[in-house]
Image 1 (cartoon, rainbow, N blue to C red):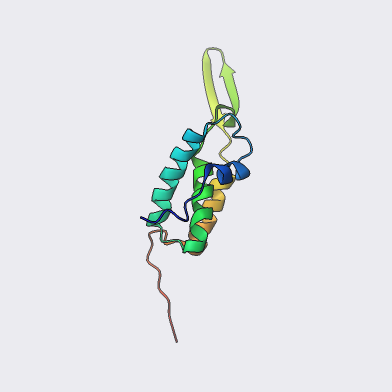
Image 2 (image 1 turned 30 degrees about the vertical axis):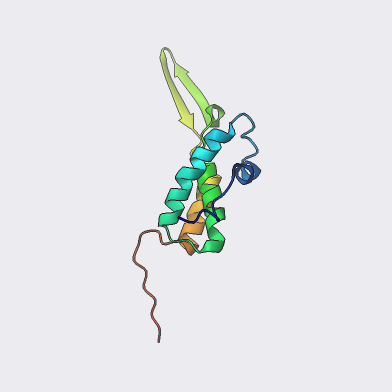
Length: 109
């Protein structure tokens, strides 16, 4: 498998400046996982690194990504933001350039 278009921890940190306390090993693991997915989606070579970067960035969760902790008596519940701009960017790239696993037809008249 050609890894020349695989992203790097430096590039992931550029889009996720909040990852200062996350080690390179954790970021590299997310990149490896993202790369495996990107390779199966048939992205064009010039889009692969970008797709890998944004998918990896979306996979890294931090404790303070939680929006709030609600408590009523002894019952506590954590609510997450539900907004992941990095995954949204990946989905946009997948929609525009990737295979997405769906059948696509081109009609030539």
